[in-house]
Amino acid sequence: PEAEPVLPPDLGTRLADELARLGRRAKPGALLVAAVPIDPVDAIGLVGRALAARESVAAWLQPAGRIIVGVGTAAEIALDGPDRFAEAARIWQGLAGRAVVGGPAAAATGATEATAATGAAGAGPILVGGATFAPGRSADPCWRGFETGWLRLPRLLVTRSDGVWLATAALLLDEAADLEAAMAELENLVGRIGLAGPALGPHRTAEAVETALPLLRRVGGQPDRRTWEAAVARAAGAVSRGRIDKLVLARRVDVAAAAPIDVPATLRRLTATAPTATIFALSPSASPERVFLGASPERLVEVRGRRFRTIALAGTIGRGQDAAEDDRLAAALLASEKDREEHAVVVAMLRSTLEPVSESVEVGRGPEIVRLRTVMHLATPIAGRLRDGEEILGLVERLHPTPAVGGWPREAALALLGEEEELDRGWYAGPVGWLDTAGDGEFVVGIRSGVVEGARASLFAGCGIVADSEPDREWEESELKLAALAGALGRFEEADD
Image (cartoon, rainbow, N blue to C red; front, side):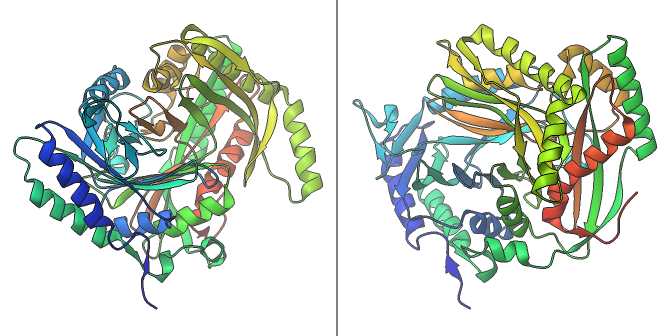
């Protein structure tokens, strides 16, 4: 069968012509951004083509909401060190201030294009990326290429926002820039990823889910069950003695398949089986063959104008075999003192953290039940209005890590994690998201996630430990969480104990 287009055949030329026009009028140091409207495209097919072309990707996929697929790198801001988010915000402000935005989808305001505002939703530069759970560099080989966090301005960006599809190209114009060569490179990039073979075409989500899953086998992980359950018991004891209120312990499972894991097919399965989650896939510029991907059910924070939204998500139970059992389990979760205690810690932390930077904070009545593919959670929505001068990266810095992935009180919990958890989390449970020049954006917590490279993957899961946590139950809960991603990658050859 003939290849199917995922991008308009003339897109590269249209974007290159617009960037060249902007570049001829811009000063060195300007950030050139051209945006054009396009018809709806197969976003996951685009991710697949980019990876096949060995281009880095930064994808954010919400089946019923926003879609962002970034390919290549125009600029990248490192997230490293104790002030990583504040420093990134400072660099982004300077870069955005030099943006020259043009193209049919942008509407200039004021006397110069350098102060252009976006006409269509999303018609402007956007950063996409994530950060390590803890400041500093990850040393584990599992995280090669992800040693630090980063926020990337993609070379080519395809977005859907408020129903509007756009393609945006970005170029940082330095003194040595050869504009003609840069335009040729852009056209070449769009041409190489502009077609998708039949396996990556649109409207094949159901087919991807129904296709026989590849066999997976467990080839390692850390820590082993005995070590992890002993750590759970010690953490529960620390809570009982009043040292902390809650601690979250994580574990990792390494799996292997007989052939390279199909990342686009995995993303399609996650989209079909976790339609309310945010699906993400990010690969480093230097190692695009390694992909950190997942389906996060937990929003860290979303900002639109001065309004923000977040969610307290803590307390877990498995799904039932039928609707009646599902309802019984949901009722048991709502009645569980252990899970409600764990959940209340997260709600209290979010409220106390957000109040100093907010004009108002509204905590939803709850908790309520959120039903995912393999588990159910207790959830309480929280919203509010920010004070003047507050921005999304500042909120990310305040909120991360939440008690749902670290523990509480934060400093005491992180100190105890340093004693009890030998695992290098890397980007697992770190913030993953996007932001634009207006300060709007959204970050989720990078859970239900793992790193895929070739035929191997490392999957991560964590559990919140409170005073009456039972080690064997927490192990089983972690297995349920691991299953959310493992089930999209393949199926195990045999059960593991």
